[in-house]
Length: 103
Ligand SMILES: [Zn+2]
Image (cartoon, rainbow, N blue to C red; front, side, top):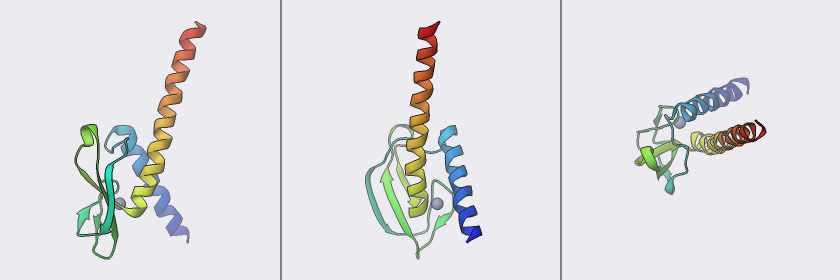
């Protein structure tokens, strides 16, 4: 149980760092589909997606305009973390604007 939580938390931290550094797409993917793994490398955790696992695949946008493959668990963490990231970016911009207005 404990290792399970730790694994997910470390995965979340890794994905959050990759989002911040631009190593992972911050926008959603097009044409997302799922299927059995074929030994692809997960773009989030860098671990091979084995044949016994399920892969989520889609096409990114901008600089990440290519086929991106995720483990289903990595995909769901990435999808929620990128929304958190975009929200934090937006609120930072709002803060800057209101700073400017008060001066
Ligand atoms: Zn993964």
